[in-house]
Amino acid sequence: NAGVMQNPRHLVRRRGQEARLRCSPMKGHSHVYWYRQLPEEGLKFMVYLQKENIIDESGMPKERFSAEFPKEGPSILRIQQVVRGDSAAYFCASSPVSWLAGYEQYFGPGTRLTVT
Amino acid sequence: GNSVTQMEGPVTLSEEAFLTINCTYTATGYPSLFWYVQYPGEGLQLLLKATKADDKGSNKGFEATYRKETTSFHLEKGSVQVSDSAVYFCALSPGDSGGGADGLTFGKGTHLIIQP
Image (cartoon, rainbow over all chains, first blue to last red; front, side, top):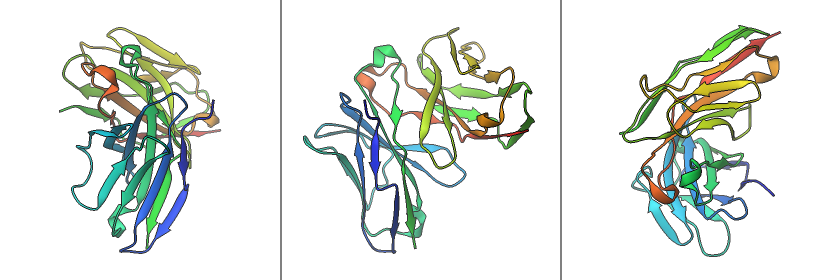
């Protein structure tokens, strides 16, 4: 069973460009979470999605950031008009609907975004 | 809101030394608690978890006990190896959310360095 897949692993963008980060959850998982890890810090929750629905986006910046998880295909985290402060590692995680089992999330390898 | 506090690093130990990484939390209800490990350039891997008070999670020689009275989940290992060098994150998920809602709340991470 393949794990959570993220691509690209490394992404370089100039200021003002758009960044698209993709995440394919584990097979059978219908819940996807995006986190951002700034240098020397822990992971911060950004958004939680199910297929075609945003469940919780309380951690998303109000502007330039958006996320989707369509019925078919991977989840996409989109950052418009990137700025240097967006440089970070972005991790995706997925889980089955199993809160009774203690709610375990499985993480992908991350996308490291560098804005020049 | 929920929060996780863990000891700051880096923590440097010699091989075969005893390890403790402290973690305390603040949360409403009955959260589940996790330790994740991140090796250089990789994503997070679940190390162990505990879902209710007095539960002990264990894996690869690491242990942590869910102490509700002290709101703690300290990570321990009796004899560390060089290969244990990594960043360790303590995390919690809300215990009163059905269906896997909400993201994990992470501590800032503790960088562990084991010297031969």
